[in-house]
Length: 137
Image (cartoon, rainbow, N blue to C red; front, side):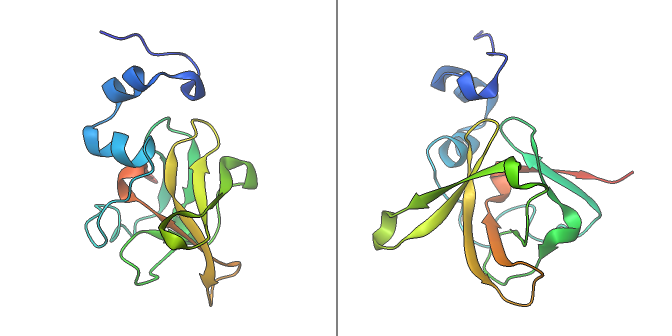
């Protein structure tokens, strides 16, 4: 059994592979994307909060989630600006902004400036598998 490093940001690939399912590893550690309309959190509409599926850091409040009709859970803002790291992503022949967990550097999804009708105008388009949901009690 591999022992887990205290700080998630310092875990080795072997430690991450032990802690995550193969699909979680592909998305969180290799910047993969789950297929649209397949994520278990897409239809989640209860009050609560969303955390990183890798390290448990708090990322989003359920009240900021909205239906963007894109096939992935979408939020208009993070729980606080320091919760995520934004990185320019030039893959797939386009420029996008990748969203990573600031605590463990796990890939969460992308943010787009097309959240029209939201208070921020942003759409944080996240992979369900990269998140965990905790309902309010």
